[in-house]
Image 1 (cartoon, rainbow, N blue to C red):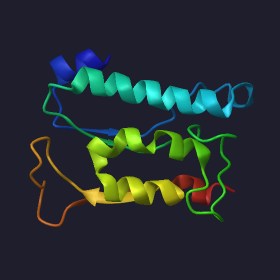
Image 2: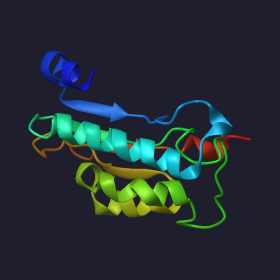
Image 3: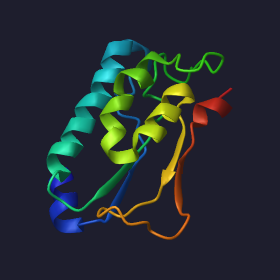
Length: 134
């Protein structure tokens, strides 16, 4: 599928919205949830490495464990996010990764694959919808 996207669709930008782990919800472990995101991250990097495609990732509600549960009382307290955040630094930058580590959201410049801004002041805002999941 990723090769089809790269070779046929040929997008400038991909917004990857997560939900990487299987939805067998409580039959997986925290490590498995993290491993799925790391594996898919590497698959995207390997497939798009020579393609002019900007990637903007964020986690879905199944990318933390237990699913649909995230503690917002402790900055940098989500083990899953902190296990895969650094693998995204090439895509979103260190400042965004640091903010993402705190609570699972970030803001970064909206850039084309060549690094130029899409428009002056344009930003990508990745919202952590877990904050509203009651």
